[in-house]
Image 1 (cartoon, rainbow, N blue to C red):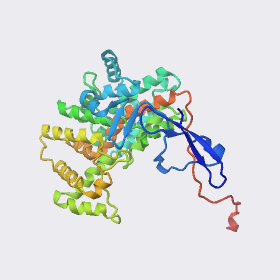
Image 2: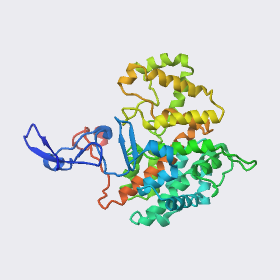
Image 3: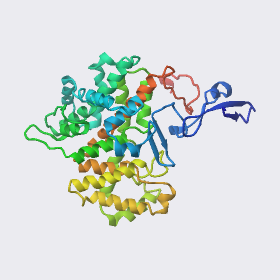
Image 4: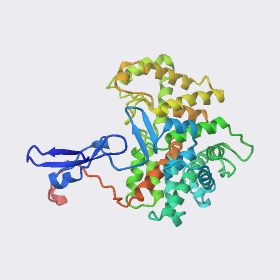
Amino acid sequence: MTTKYELKNTQTGKATLLDAMSGTIGPDVINIAPLLKEQGVFTFDPGFMATASTESKITYIDGDAGLLLYRGYPVEQLAEKSTFLEVANLLVYGTLPTKPQLDAFCSSITRHTMINEQLLRFFQGFHHNAHPMAKVAAVVASMAAFYHDSTDINDPRHREIFAHRIIAKLPTIAAAAYKHSLGQPFVYPRNDLRYCTNMLNMFFAVPCEPYAIDPIAAEALDLLFILHADHEQNASTSTVRLAGSTGANPYAAISAGVSALWGPAHGGANEAVLDMLEGIGSAANIDAFLARVKDKHANVRLMGFGHRVYKNFDPRAKIIRGMCYRVLEKLGRTESPLFELALRLEEIALKDEYFVSRKLYPNVDFYSGIIYSALGIPRSMFTVMFAIARTAGWVAHWQEMVSDPHMRIGRPRQLYTGPVKRDYVPIDGR
């Protein structure tokens, strides 16, 4: 049965019946399309807090229950039993692959990891201390000039080739950005290594001596990538969709997503958590710090706590907290001052009525930066790592959108509060 909602204009008395649309789970949405024609009004929802911008089959979040599903599978199950490439395959194709399907996908990704040699030369045009996200966004956008043989968004095979290429090549681009910042030679990908192992090798190997990859480091990275692979219609995913809705080539759309992710309120939050912990310094300073957080005039934020969607524990934070212990124990850093400080801060904050009443619980960013630091990845690269993982989700959403025969260009409207119509005044009369 279709649910109808009546919206009545209190000035004119005119009523409009709006249809409610139901998904498989989650809140219904109201189709507001008739409002402009029948009532002459737009809806106003700053930040899209209560607006469904699209229909999607990829990811579902229940913020109150702390639930995150990829194609219906709880992220906890995938984190425990799956791998990042299997999750990427799931997001892109919609179902868990059979072993032959997964083997073929992994083989394709492995054999697409090299990038055109001319792209590597692009890095020489950046200053050595340029932010890695600036390099990655620029090089990803430039890929359209090198792989234009498969950018017909209306061709399903072209879309698939693009998906494999961007998932495969982004770690290579990220590693090249890192090596350029160090002044070290680029390390080429190896087809005998798995996805995360290969990436760590490109990051940390040097030509003058062998590099041994710690299995726990590769496992931790794979887990982080699973947890960051997708998160519904977040800012960067919405940016990819909006850019892609114009018919732009897919590399331009992904580059737009990289740029959106760069913001400290989005992908840069884990870097801010470490800055905050270092600023606190020791457990003895936690109470004073939290007092400043509560002071609305102090402009101090508790980074890594709270989430736009989750009003309960972020399910990813629980998983990542356990991996923190494993990584630090394996790498001989069990006495990590920042980790111990993070644990103490979490303990105190979760007993404080101020934060509990506001449902400010640790999110995925609270611990991910500690793991990245333990793996030797510098803070400037944290958001790049996020981008590598989120590319799987971006690609899935882009493919879903462009394969929809009813796709339309995104075109939000506004509440205009500027000057009314006025006449031009010549310069000598102003």
